[in-house]
Image (cartoon, rainbow, N blue to C red; front, side, top):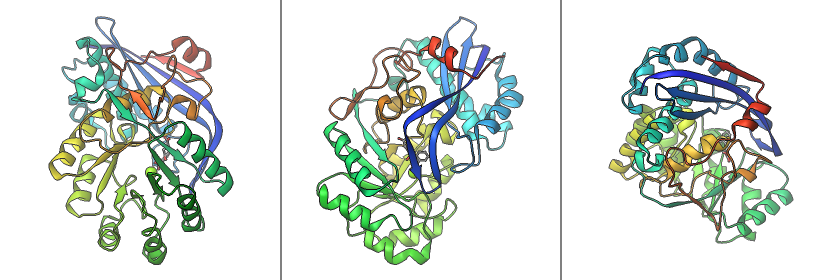
Length: 366
Ligand code: OSB
Ligand code: MG
């Protein structure tokens, strides 16, 4: 496929209610969408999932827009791409900027699958016809957290991830555990602890959690492996896994027992497939993480989650978890805790272009 035309949109959606982590609160979600067209007029869509400020990753919407406009898009335009797996190598002339690279990688995978006339999940090697859906619960007062868990239990969600931070951890989780004794429950610490919090982390070990996500800083592979020796609860690394190489380190150093894969953060579906291969080889369970993204990125996540290594329900909640109106028509639906993996070609969810045109604050064509 020869890439002839690329459109970059910048837009923002307001969350139905703010989502808080230890880093701060997201109220309005700004993001980029990329529409890539080849010489036959076939189209693929990708989303850039960086946030407007560098609280969770170094990249932001602005740095991504810069890297895309000045380096990645001019390079890709006019190029012939035989297979989207080539993106990692193709984009290696730019250091870092994984979230910017991911948006094009995702669009190329959608385009490639559409040209084959096959669903993206199948093209990636997916086997599942539906996936289990999990939900992330932001930090707020105990009562509201329990109410939202209750609502999502009733909606059938299969896994509950609770955001924690120092001072808002053991006691909250203990209350949730008392109210919901059999709930598939996990905690995401977003790197907010250090080795001096050992006794607190050992307390969390008594709550029958599925896993504790990213207790320490992103570069602390050694400290995580020391912690994993002490805890029976599996550690799952999120912020630490910025590339295939980091996933390999985490496995070899025994820094965790579970990995979360976020295609939009690690450079796209191409590196995600490499982590999937690694994880299968080393018997590491995987799940697909979320970025409070629109239906475009969620649709890529659904396709990835249909691969056999993704055995744990991820952060793939329905469009109505965050949005009044999503940028994909009909939105992503969760029914009895499951999302159907589309059988239509490409992403399989239809992009609401008139809505995107209406809300875009920027639209640039290359
Ligand atoms: O740490 O997993 C995280 C959202 C934004 C930034 C970081 C994280 C999250 C989530 C996923 O917890 C929430 C979702 O997409 O539903
Ligand atoms: Mg996380």
